[in-house]
Length: 219
Image (cartoon, rainbow, N blue to C red):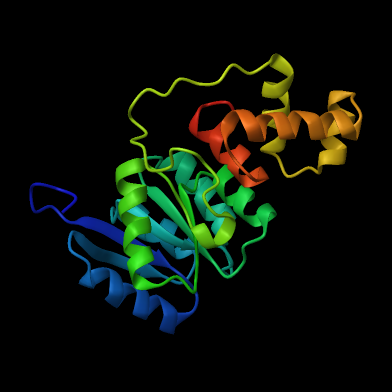
């Protein structure tokens, strides 16, 4: 159980596919500690319900929706209701989409073909540790993923240039553009990246982005 008391974690589900949304609602309602506060077709509907004082603890948010998509909705939530945790839901696992959702404030990202056990694990992890990234997307990209985020972690010593590189990697620009912005060669950028992979014990660009976001190194 997540709570010693009986207070249930209230979840909202936003997805324009009615059948999937209803199935997710039924599944989440079957989990101990969780109840579904409301369902929505898109971000506009989410805004309307929240403005009517239906404020969930967590939103399972589809990335691709009509009228107001997951990116715009996550950004609005992050600005206006930062206490609501967002778990992004998508059919797409490309780095660009993942990084963009995480930049907009999502605390986790899962695929629509997720199995029930992993969905429960993702909800628990976002609530307890403020983070979850599906292993299907990029494997165990962050060392100590299961460590309690509240505990102090000693950060590796990073050079000012490595910190600059980490900030740029959190944008959507290419490695070639990062090299141009830093006034260095693409080869030097590769060296920064490989050095950070080694220092931070991560294996992908998404891993670097999550490290930067979680440790306050991203804008």
